[in-house]
Image 1 (cartoon, rainbow over the protein chains, first blue to last red):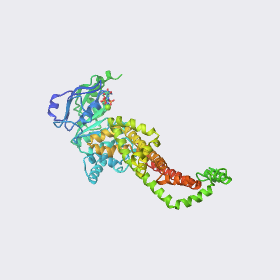
Image 2 (image 1 turned 90 degrees about the vertical axis):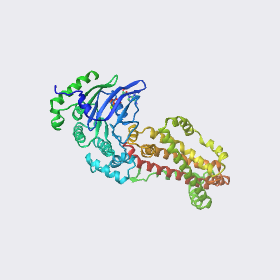
Image 3 (image 1 turned 45 degrees about the vertical axis):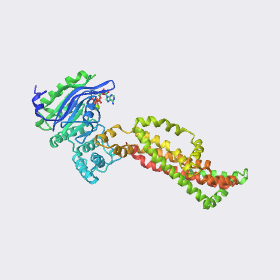
Image 4 (image 1 turned 120 degrees about the vertical axis):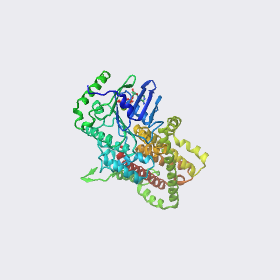
Length: 264
Length: 250
Ligand SMILES: Nc1ncnc2c1ncn2[C@@H]1O[C@H](COP(=O)(O)OP(=O)(O)OP(=O)(O)O)[C@@H](O)[C@H]1O
Ligand SMILES: [Mg+2]
């Protein structure tokens, strides 16, 4: 089988941008995460994949500093996280756009919160609006955009603050299949071009295998990292060939075999 | 409504009621109801008198001041209640009590506390308007999309930023709805306050007219007040319709 599973050499060599150490999180009686440790290599895309309710969103929000872990700690660039910070930016599953503000104001919101002047931040915002393919919609309002376009606005907002770590919670779940495939290709290009660390939550096995450098397979009850998978051979074969690659197909099958017992 | 193929303008039915009033007045059934024509001609005389203009000025002043305090205090308190559990638990029972309380009964107490003048009237006006503004602002904040709050937090928004750039705007449609109802209540408040205190504004005027059995004057001023209140309420409804376009699309 042309599959490279947990490979200690690779993990040791790749420097971690984010590491979570022995994270536990309880919501009252519900144990959402138990003693979870994970390394997120710099400049790479790591997917968190797992069945519904296994704590993916919880973990992402703990990394973002939006939730406090019950125990354990998160380090970003060697510094312990105590709250949200400019080194991380979040892409929300439901977009979280301000309905009363135009696209350009939404994209510039993160910079506005950092106290940047209006003309400067709107210049930067305009650049990222073009980059995500929304040029010409700067002065539209969110309700005038399609779901896919709104998601791009959320992405542009996260990109424009130029954070090292991008946290994405099921960013493509609200768009149709064609748009989703386009987004996945764009995401691959983004990982290549921007020297950023991506942490990506998804439900879709195919999507995780397609876009990830590293896949953390989470399983529930109690939530833990079941397996870390590092697809290696088909990354370089070009966007068009990935879905036909035997390794790609093998990994998809392997993950499904691990997950199927958890799906009623 | 159309009549014999002609489109009648809105509220044409008022003409019918006006004619009925005129008829009852002319028939001399009761001195209490003078003919409408007499009331209207009195109206034109009355609005030119110094007493009326003074009353109108005082009322407007008390009304604007009262509404100002109701809005300037009501909106922030409502938003803070929506954001903060503790504050909400502390204040909500009182807001609900005052919202449904017969505030008119409080006016004599206010007179004792704040004197028989403008101050008491302004406070009465504020008390009539403020509770619904608080309650609506609170409701507007309560229904805010949680992920907007998280989004602001994740981009490092300060509490002040969150207040002015997220909570206020997210709650704006509800806030405006509350302000509209609050202002309509404040109209009642300013009139009731004056009637009970009755040495300033229209209260003094009514006192004067009814003491001297000047029924036409009495009705004339009443028509002016009704028309003013109605105009304010229609104007606010118009403003609210203009803002609500985005509320529907949240
Ligand atoms: N605010 C909360 N209060 C109580 N329990 C919660 C809360 N948020 C999450 N949970 C619980 O924690 C567990 C993990 O939730 P989480 O949202 O992280 O799962 P997830 O993997 O993101 O699921 P999905 O794939 O459906 O989004 C679930 O069992 C959920 O019921
Ligand atoms: Mg989730």
